[in-house]
Length: 322
Image (cartoon, rainbow, N blue to C red):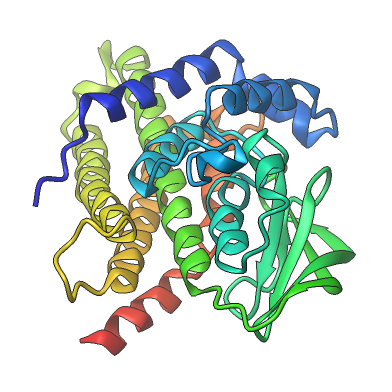
């Protein structure tokens, strides 16, 4: 099977990359963490105008009628620029959840860039980033609008986690498994982007930082650290693309798509975690400072490792299929 991206996909990635690059996302992300969401909201409005918010929403509701492959390509770029907010829930989880539950009303709002988040028990018991977002809950097959009961900060200064309770019931007998798989896959794509960005930051630092009159990147130990990260990321990316093809139905009959999603989440989480740890080692003391952008990426990576299923949960799911 060919996992290479087409020109359409590379153009999509370049479009998202260019939009986020012009927005100075590290500054916008710090403002978000401080409670000022205006700069990020402007970026998300631009992404919605470009059709990114509605990639998994059909055209009749203002979406792009694209697929999971396009979604992971876009979300990887969002991860690469450390974009805050309920990205995974707004772009991946809720478009599928609401479609499968035959609750089409909010889909147009999502396509227009409105943020939304949800909890799906027991896999994702807490709702992320509920401020300025519509909140939903799936509990025992019942989809409802949710009310926030309490909110806690996470290791990522831009991310909060909220306990929610059910409000207005929207649908019952809801199978949220496909939406949960989309959440795990989108999180894997976001982690890939974070891992790639940290590798780039650490590599640039290794070329400019000198010890004993030489760039530290010329030392074999540093090269090996960064090479290990590059290999991990490149090994994880085809798993993410393969799982996206599975969700889009472009795989041989009998393929266990959920297992492929779990494999992608495990590989991407491990690659991003390795990138965070090795980048910190390469950069030394400056990597520990909140003022350096690498801190934004490291803390977001740590926060997302267990989102939409921890590595242990997904390893167990893989084991049960073997």
